[in-house]
Length: 327
Image 1 (cartoon, helix red, strand yellow):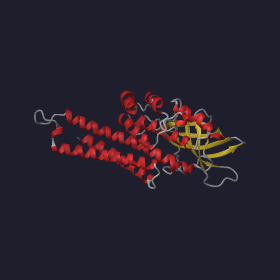
Image 2 (cartoon, helix red, strand yellow):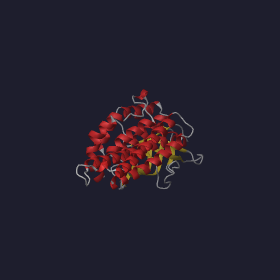
Image 3 (cartoon, rainbow, N blue to C red):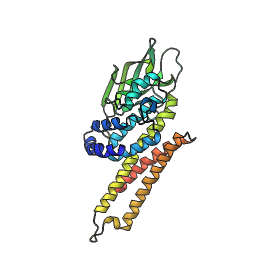
């Protein structure tokens, strides 16, 4: 299904999405309708898949449009976070609509002051009365900003008697007053991901929007956020590398060399270069898929495998694109 959507919907829109910095509404609608509940448990109407499916779907969509792939990937990560310890009310309000293709979610974890250490949020969460939570702070690089129906946030408990460093996760509906979006981020790649900063100016949410228990954020980060985030990105990058390899191969088969009737693909040096590219992409694919399976069964060094896979595929995508351009 992901391949079909990628070929029929994502690919025809990809150039315009990139050139115009346009959020891929058409592609996201198709993916949300068909695969929006990919990681939502079956009891909530979802497909019940895990990390391997996220990587495989990411590769299929990344081949056609990296922007759409990363936008949908962040929806899948957000969905997995909500599902991990979802209450009955959260299942009804978020997971069932997500599974039905009616709700788009995303992450809002990074902050201007903490950079890559996104597990150390400074956004303050304090109780207001008996059943309300007030959020104050700033987030950066929120993918799907202004387009999602909900945002998964990380927070720091504030108020009298609160222990230092008590980090928690919440989910915030897009309609909550007090959410102010900054200007769009103009990147060099994945230019349609609608990434923006978010100011939370005393935004108030119901306390049932707290994910898990207070202080659970570190558990979420290492058990859900990091694995799913790494696989969503790794799948997208793998799709980019695979697409570059396919483009290079197709070009060489079309291109005629100096000798009449002989394609450039028939030259031994070119064949060796293309074979090296294929091997790089294939071994990276196997590393990603193996790391995903290891993580799903709870292998002791699973997180190391996931992080290594993401690092390897970033280098593989860059090298493969450079080789493709050279050829």
